[in-house]
Length: 288
Image 1 (tube, rainbow, N blue to C red):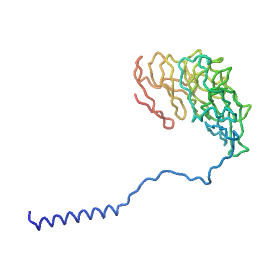
Image 2 (image 1 turned 180 degrees about the vertical axis):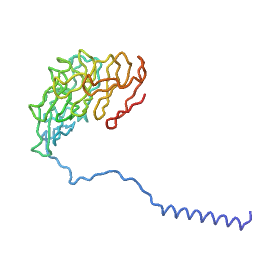
Image 3 (image 1 turned 135 degrees about the horizontal axis):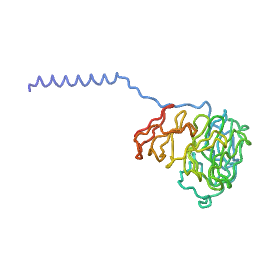
Image 4 (image 1 turned 180 degrees about the horizontal axis):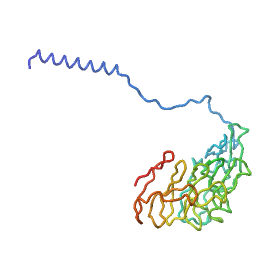
């Protein structure tokens, strides 16, 4: 190639490179910032529930009627256990007497508390029975709170609270006697709750409660009961086998009359092979 032509090509390449660099410099680059909120004031202690160097280990914070409810202790046993984010019992297919599975560690005196954000307004709501098991699953539904708590006479069962001492009590002893029903996944749907529990008559099933003992019932009795469920704005959805349709998608409004198979995707005993996905509003999504 002629020397003059080579110099011309090199000059053009150099000019093009310089032009690209100028374009990059002139192009604004936008980066999405993180959503951050600054506190109006520095955080400060407003209540020393367990005075001195002992911990109160509060957890399970849930709002009701403008106040926040939580579990905590003001006893010396506080330093004998570590704070738990929100303990959830694992499902047990065949509940056994509590004495068969003795608890480990010290007896814990964990109670239900509430606060309005002031020291004077931070008070104990209910002195719960001492136990080696954590009370947990504090859930708001309507104008009431629901949670699981242990008592020597009943095992770990469903409790309710209206925010007062007299209004906090055992709601239902689902597995009668000292045995626990191993209830879990307490979830609000409107003014009622759904949860999974086991009793002597039905085994493990989905239950519901409207806040009364009479209104705390299993939604149906399946041949192979569900062990979990998901909820929309108005209903609970779960996979169950009634012995006729196979394992299919069911839904419930909390009544036995309102509990039915949504669709028999694979007619017969084979089942639809369904996997529930999160709900959006009142619509439940799944794959099969």
